[in-house]
Image 1 (cartoon, rainbow, N blue to C red):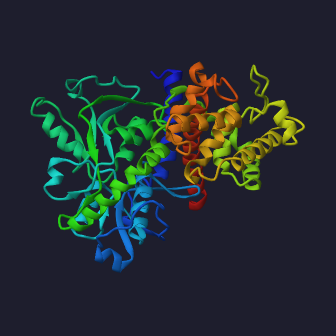
Image 2: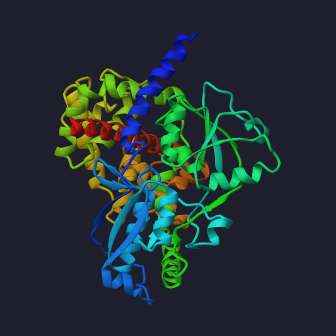
Image 3: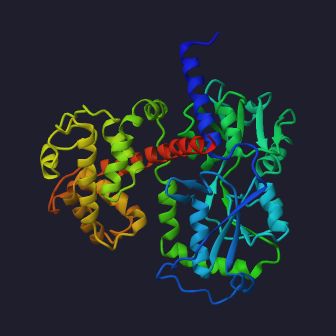
Length: 482
């Protein structure tokens, strides 16, 4: 018999599965979809390629195979997003050509497209395995992952390989997961699993969350991103050591591989790969089962009332309304009467002096508070140095909102004195916590500050923003199908 808690968890799981299943195109998708993005100016310090890949230059387009997933490529509220997409876009800019993204159903389909030379390369989070090295060329390693078992919280999580025997275990077919299981079965002959050829790993995760499957195997980076959308998932053991992710090329593409390697060396030396990783993955480890469940409930129960205020304020002050809403959730959980022990109040938790500064009469009025927070946030962004890259400038603005612009300037000056880059958010995340260390704050203009707080603040706002984006994409898809 189901308990109330189990019923609640099951209900939430069903809602979440519907949301994300629609978002990630479901189980049955067209064999491929294509979209072309015009070239942009490459990083100013990147030296153009010496070697030319004539076929690509003549065509004027780099053709890249990928799949639709949060770790690779997807359409966000403001346009295309995804780690692999942005990395491929930067490489296309280096080549001075347009980027054509071609979406396939599965890794198997992507590898077939490479083998048949339908595309120039595959950027899809593909593991570099011994078997694949026999058939393809690989670019440089840009990320390392582990294969992990993930299960529904209703089931006991396996702690060792032997615990996988007699379990309902599922994987996508023709994958690195199957390769690894075939190795493991030599020592564990009773180990069995079910392979799926017409469904993605993300869709399998949906089924686990929905209770249709007990456990699956997935890459650790995929699990990290999906776990916050499905709070009833639990990660079990890793069945591999670290494995390399790399782009895949045809066996005859040695020239393209050399050009790719040349670009990648510059790209990493200029810290661009690190910036991209920070943008998509640094804040991912935050996971609070109760908090995520609460956010999903409030997206339905509270956000609709305040969404028009967020949209209007963001439009007036050149901000992203989803990010503004995420910031407000971090501040007050969308409670217009929220109050902290320090006296900040309202949806955007404004201090009384700040409220007066931005012309807000009542901090407890939701519309006024949201507009006041947007005005203040916009003013902070306007005071930031132009040397900060546009991609990360918003994180500096959020940090200033949390800790104050004076302390942020202190941290930037401290970064310089320590040989760090004040325009690198990665470096600033290391420096900001030092504001609580007397060794450093005693010689700073604004003195002591709890510098670790803005670092965590930014992580959580980004975390909430991503969940909101997925929910809003689902709503848009529903409207479009009516």
